[in-house]
Image (cartoon, rainbow, N blue to C red; front, side, top):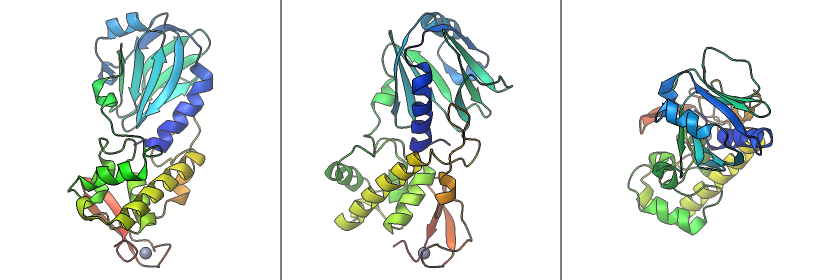
Amino acid sequence: MPELPEVETVVRTLRPAIVGRRILNAEFRQLRVLRGSAQDTMEALAGRKIKSIERHGKFIAIKLDKGFLVVHLGMTGKLLVNAEQTKWTHAIFTLDRGMLHYDDQRQFGRIEYGDELPARVAALGPEPLEVSLPEFTRRVKERKSPIKAVLLNQAVVRGVGNIYADEALFRAGVHPKRASAALGKDRIERIYNAMREVLAEAIESRGSSVSNYVDADGRKGSFQQAHRVYRRTGEACLKCGGVIKRIVLAQRGTHFCGTCQR
Ligand code: ZN
C-alpha cells in the first residue's frame, strides 16, 4: 500500500503536470472507486480549474476553484499523467492539456468530490514530519496499544503504514509490542527521530516499490533496497547478524530483530 513517502512522490510528480489546468471532462468506468454519484461528480468537475495539490497523510487533496477532489490510492491505486489506458483505468480526467488517469487493479482506492475536505481527512492526526516531539510524546503516551499499532493509527499521526512503522522501530531499537503508555522519554524520542529520518530518506528515494507502486510518471521508487527489516523474515539482521522475525500485530505482518529491538 502506498504510504506517506509514496503518496508524497505522486503529489510532487503530479503538481507540475496538473496545477493550473482545467478539467474538461471526467469519466468513471468502475463506480466502486467513486464515493457519491457518478453523474453529480462528472457535472461538478466539468470546467473546474486545478488550484493546488496537497498530501494529507495518505490522502491526495486536489483543490479546485470550487471544491476538492480527494483521492486515496488504497492498495494498488495509481494516478498517472498521459499514460496508456489499461483494463484497470477506472477514471479518466481530460484536462485542457493532457490526461489524468486513475488506475487501480484491486479497487480498494477511492475518489471523492466535495465542497470541503471530507471529515475523515480533516480528523487525521498531524503530519509526522511536522509534529513536535512534545506533541508526539503526548499522543503516544495516551494510548495503551503496542507502539506498532499506535504508529499505524492515522488519528495519532497521519501517513505512516506498515513498512515505515517496522523500519522506524528497528532504527529506534524498540520492540513493536511495547505498550505505548509505558514507553519512557528516551524510547519515544528515538522513535520520533527514527520515524522522521526513515520517512525523509524514503521521500528522497522516491518511495518504496514493493508491489506495483509507481509515481505519476510511471517511475518506480528505490527505497525498498534500503529496507532493514520489512519483508526480510529469516534473513540476517544488518546490525547484529541475528534472524529477522515476523509476527502478526494489529492484523499486520510485523518484522523486527528480537536482539536489537527491546
Ligand atoms: Zn539485530
